[in-house]
Image (tube, rainbow, N blue to C red; front, side):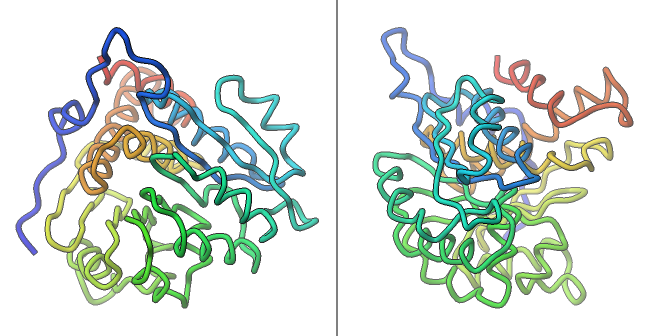
Length: 285
């Protein structure tokens, strides 16, 4: 693995497409988000709002039917639609046919934030890995349900970006006890063929060959919902045509930089993930 490159504003700005005056919403990416369950509607909302702030043209958010009224009321701009649930407020495997239909024409897909863990959620993630053609971001429970099934990642039909924190990374088989963060992330990327974004202090982003390290961010970002914001930023960039490795590196810089703006103005104790979403436009001028 080559020496790591530092993420930067220049990298992020280079990935943002120039907006033609005659453009329409279809020119700026159509993405599908599969998020949320009973008790975890905030994860879905924050991922969708972050993608919106990043400039996605069309955002489709599929949620379990049990929480559809909540998220439809929370969100105005994203297109929220209900999917079959398992009777416990999580997605049912019966949702797969509609998910596959909704994926047609999408430039990226996110699965995981707030989904919960069940056999049905595992079936949905497995089905996405088998049939999704657009870049797929697996975050949170999209990663957790694959514990013990890392082999499914090797045969994925599409480019996959994994965004684990250290606990999720270990559950998937990451070897942080014997290797450095860069080495462990690189080993997982090489083994699975995925881009790995290992969150934490000095986030590591690698495809097993090229590696980026991100130095933006602060302890005020260590709160529930922060990762959902990152996942939304990343999926939006992919939907607008950015390559997976560069999109992941730029997303890490943008996410951390938004957090740094909030910490400077509000302090690390009082800032929230919602504040970070609000700070994003100041980084995109």
